[in-house]
Length: 616
Image 1: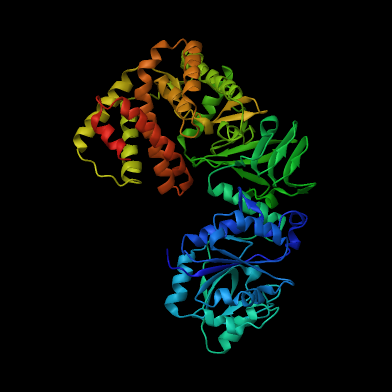
Image 2: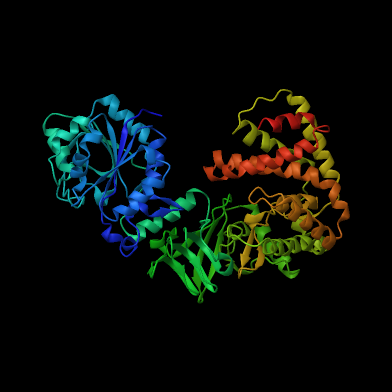
């Protein structure tokens, strides 16, 4: 922690531009994936300081009092009622007793950002500023005029925070976050005042009012329904997720879900409801029928356009997907329906393979998306739109065990088809026959695991590298010796789409090749993305063996699990460190647990691997 300075959260506003949402919920309590805005700010502050938290109140003050009383910050929080509202300057003056003991952070309650509060505080303390403002280049709001050293000279249109095009000089925008010295309070008059007036008064008195540039940081002012929706969607993308369902929500198992969805506490979905790209506010009832691109509240629905709800657009197309692929996918409307463009990099060998595999699989009833058209020589194809509801997202909705098991059996039916009928007819598709998941590929996977996860994320020192390499060699030899079929090679819950809330379809199959079928079974039944219970897993394993007539698969299963879990952990490390998709590392917890479980079972056969995995 940086120090123990205090924090003051400005939370008294009416939120008029957010109506009708704020008729029911005050702006500071608007939830983003289950967490009110004010709570997110308090958590970020608590990472850099153990100081107290002051909050001013006016609109729906009782609701904020209840939050403060029941929050994890209750013992550190002091509330300051305003009647009437005192403005951004008057709020601080009203809390002068609380703030006068030392430097303090002021943070508007409607700001969501990843601005480095430590840097802001440390700069303020080291430079001796009376006020240090977190700013950024935001042309619409660039109204703070600064000199070449970042000192504040003037503020244009302070009430509206709008830039004046007639003013010359360097301008920047205030983010709603600042650090102040206690001396700053003397520049605030009693009663209603605006903070910018005090900035200029302090600067004219010879004090340093400094703008610290945070251009490039994420920042969102939750002032409108659209900006709120965008903040929710951005929060999901930052976590690599498309679906958030609060544990206290209900009815989602009886609804049809698709796209980005945030269903908050008390959200109740009626049977027959269909949601796509929606936010369901706390305590809201969702009636039957289609709801798309909207915010649903108690007794109201706010209909938004795709960009307003927070979807990422490229022209009229919607960018889709949160996985680890380098391919780009865009949803377009064509002939009255949606379709998905897959765009690969020029020369990507997977493109032609994907097209040929699709044609082959469709001939043998493997449920993959149909090809609508392909572009000649440009690594671009148009596919049937399977929606956004992966099995991984489908499983986020609380469901009865029997419902989940029935879905997994349908998924395993696809796997049986790959391992039997597709294998028997693989001569029809030379692209598959020429690709074998062999010793070299298996050794590449363990090398990937060591480089990208063991060394790259855990920075572990290997006690006996030579002995460990021998064990990896023996493991690859053993797995390579097992009988082979056509395998998907990444058969996990994010690569299974669920259409019409009940039908699984297969995607991302361009990596299919000839390999041990136990590798696919391990991928789906021991999936780090979703932990199946042991008893259900055993029943599903028996179902697969019976359907595929694959009694000989069981001896290979444990070794393929070892191999698969090392590959997955290597991928998480690579995607996090190299591709910047840090959200994949959250799955490393379950992946590591599964690998430890497997390594314990073979510790006599692979002692070096066991000791390595034990230390992860």
